[in-house]
Length: 285
Image 1 (tube, rainbow, N blue to C red):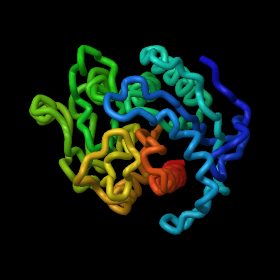
Image 2: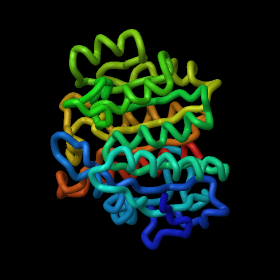
Image 3: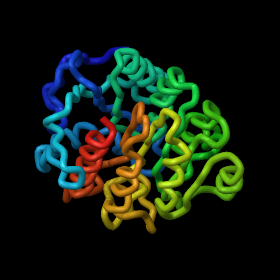
Image 4: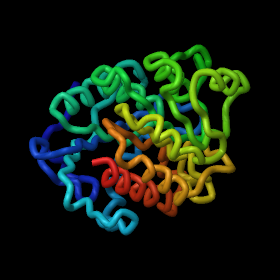
C-alpha cells in the first residue's frame, strides 16, 4: 500500500487538517476497470476536488460548516489499472490503517466495486456491520460475464462477507430477474424510492454502519454524468433527506461513487456530487 499521509496539494474544500489531528480521512480511488458500459469514473475524485471551490463550505441544510471539522484529504491512492483484486487490497489496507488510527475513512470512487475493499476493512473491525446502499442497480449478480469482481457484483460480494439481513438497499430500479428473486430473501430492498429509510435506520441503530452512495441513484435529468444512467431515479433532495435521516447512527465509513464527469460537460453533475459529499461529511463526522 502507498498512501499519502501529508495534506494533498489540491484538497476538497475545507478539508485541510493534518492527518494526526483529523477525525476523517478522505481519499480518492481512481479506478474503473470493470465498468461495462461507459468508463470515466476514475476521473471523479480529481474533478470533485477541482470543482469544490464552486460551492460553499457552509451547509444551510444542517446549519454547519466544513471549516469547523478536522478532515484530512490524502489525495488519490495509486491503484493498478486492470487489476481489481489488487485495487481492492490497496483500499482495504488504507481504510484499515485509518480505522486503526481511530479515524473514519471516506472514499471518492471510482466504480462501485471499490466499495467492497472499504467494507472489508470495516467488517474486519466491526463484525456486526450493517450496510446502507443507495443505487439504481441491485449489483447482486453472482458473477458478471464470468467475473466475480465487478461493479455488477459488488453487493453480492458484500453479502458473502456479511450474510442475510444486513444490507439495506434504496432506489433500486434495475437488475436481472434472478437478482430481484434472490434479493427478496437475503437483503432489504426499497424499489424506486428511498421510502422506508426511517425504519431501516431504526433497525441499524445499535450497529456500526457503512454507507455507499452510487450517484446513479439520482435521476439522470439531474445527474447525467454517470456511466450507467437509469431513468426513474430519485431527486437530489430526496437522496439528501434520506442521508440526513441516518445522522446519529454509528457510521464507521462511507463512499460516493460512479460520477463520470466528462458525460456532463455542464459540470452540474460534479457540482451535485460535491454537495452530497459536503453534506455527508458534516452529517457523519
